[in-house]
Length: 522
Image 1: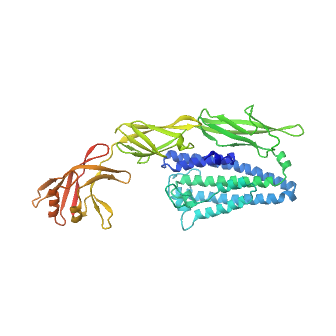
Image 2: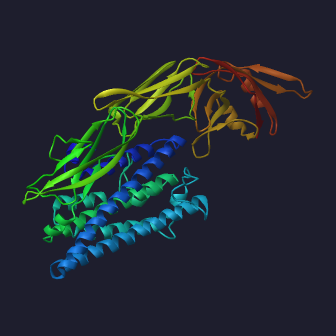
Image 3: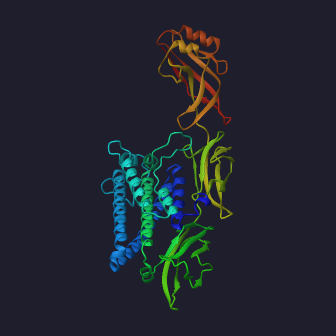
């Protein structure tokens, strides 16, 4: 997310956006156990954030409730609106909880635990629950979110906050890279998503609901003259941009009061030292991994010369920088060919990531990488480096085994009745006219994982006379010789011959003897 787009957002929303970027990066990767664990960590972080924001919203609502009790004539209308906001938010929040429960049950059975999904990598469950045309739960959720977004934004008097809420709860169709058709919001959320990813996305949506609810309650509270109530119920809050930071990067948090007097800033002390700014911004360099607690207090001076103290405490977790490296083709590297590879570091822009490889070359093309190992049997080690806060750091090293390409399959190329290219690989009837039209044989690996062509160097055809004697004929390189073609013309329906001693050269420079091929003339 560009810096120009984040200046108007709250620290809490910046934190959520950062976590969403991490989630998006993960979705681009193959679903490995490490990636699934990453989703689980994001889900846990969002859940904790939901609890924190919910507590903050409870405080705002209690202030409106207290003011209403003190002055019903002045605070009643705002308290009623706040109660309606709470009801609408709770209803939609509970509905999303029910959807998460449905997905978990579909994945793990009736005893499923949403917080501990067993079949996390199932790619079909989310689509079955949310995109089934019979129930249209995904479309229904989108309509509910649209209704809630329009309702909440209608309460906002601040245009910036209104725009932020509409952005956070946007259900606009998205267009994926390489496509021209916009994809409905519900399909982008749940189509072909692992169970753990779908649960995490729904939790992120609940987080956005809590954020919108808090902004609405703040606006309603600002509409009443609740100065006395605010003074009597001052509370200190720690709002971190993220509780998880990588070693070498910065941990940032805002220490604020729930209601701030812009004419009088509080004095903030953390671990016995006063902050060097009056904005409540606390920053410290994360030099080692682990969980770190800190505490402090705010001193608020009053007009009568007295000072009140408000304590607070929080913590943050420092993790080692991580990267995900995966080979696109079967998680192995083959010598002599280009192996597509995905390399990314969660939370770090692609332009700030670099990588090197031993036993071969590793080249970059935009956001993708290509590994070309050189020696079979030797390991290829990929080392990833990321620039974090302007300093290069090695974030991951992964070792791959380098294998020789498997043997290809010989075939005869022909076109079917519609003109589509086909490959005849033997062991079933083959039209004599197609056989006579074929110039020779080819060889390739085409098993949907690899698509590698080989150069046929030579082969033999073996025919049998009426006495059962084998009559071999030698090819002209990869082409049928004239003697072979003459033998084809003498074959009658149901006769068969063999193509054997096929020698082919692969892109890795290795010559191979291929398995024989039986041809049955139709």
